Length: 341
Image (cartoon, rainbow, N blue to C red; front, top):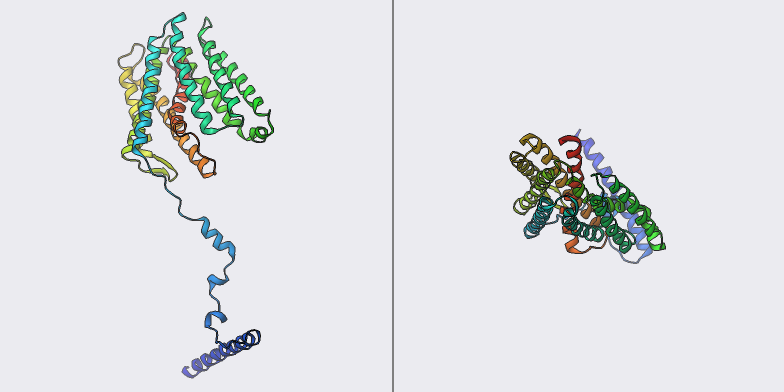
């Protein structure tokens, strides 16, 4: 057995020597340098013979850069959400019948202009100045349509939304440069128009029997949800929902819970509400507001990963709270009309 193994090893070594001699002969003919090649020249390693596609695939799986959480910025966004909540809630408490609704409509119009500024600068749809102008006009028409009718109805706001979206899309087809991107930005244009008109539903809601109380419950819950979520991110942004999004799951959950608790406490003191009904309304409003704020963060991360140029700094960070209240406003109206009344 030992002699057989030795004979096989000697035969294998002879084969290697013959291959090395062949390489020496060819290399000596091409270049007059006598150098004995190494064993790597005869038997190249697997990494040398690997196709280029494997190396390219390894480059694609590089570690994703984690976006750091800036506590000061999170606190500033929480403060902005608090200002929005105070303005929208207390403005509704001062509104009255007839011409007394105009001051609250002015407050709503100011918030709508902030929404147009933040969302158009962040999303940057085609024909940005035209879209922003159309949205501002749509906001004004929506406020007028919410104040002037004798009976409270949300139907005129639907007409304003449809007309504003149609005009905004047509304005994007005027220039060739904007026409190329118009089809891809239909959803973002619709989102801006519907979002800015949705704030006017608070004026219509204030004219319902339990409208003012519903605004207090739902918007207070939304504001507390956004504030607690952002303050939690400033202290403990854990667990991270995505490396590119500087938000934590704990903040979203704690915010929704705090908003629901706030609504239940407020409902125990308001006529027409019970802690249970107020908690349900607050849970819906707070949850939708927190999810809208979180979705804005994901959308911003997607634009950055796509290589789009950064937009106005303050507009990007105003976008989340404004989007949260824009979604909570029609949700509050729906719950008041279909559930509470």
